[in-house]
Length: 200
Image 1 (cartoon, rainbow, N blue to C red):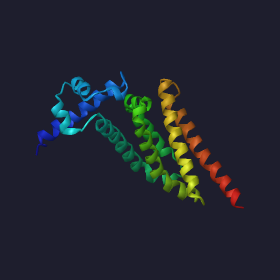
Image 2: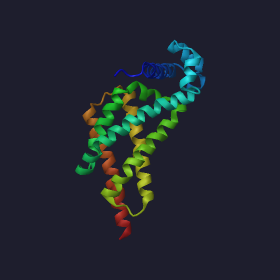
Image 3: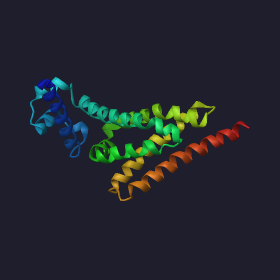
Image 4: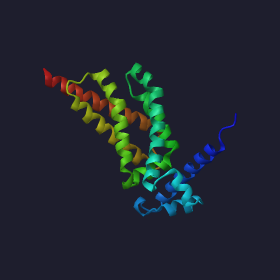
């Protein structure tokens, strides 16, 4: 049975609007981008835009949510292996591959101050997925330590990716992965070892 052609057209329109917004964000600040700018770039009328979004802010939010949903699906697919091996490596590599595949989108969002909500969303994603791992691996006595660690790692990972993209990914992916893993696991082990010594 064929899918509803209206659904296909709607998906195509939303995709085109998001692509047009991203292209515009490479040229000007988000605050200076109007709905008309987006629809002109997409060769679409404003009425069609408003069938899907209330404005450019909602369009940007939808774009960010699409990325985050895909990242969460990758995390879910590799979480069991991550728990089993006691390492973040099984999650790091597919997420990094995803970021490379969507490098232009990530680079635009990383460099746009108006898209800072994306940073906060990544921070929440790391926190929600990382908290059970930290509890399972380290059994921290003070939950605040977990919060500090995961916030530190989330912002560190964003900074690592942004720097890697800025340097045109000159460092081989395997080396970047190894460095990220060492930093994450080293920070975790050092923090909770210190916590353990403090309880003696």
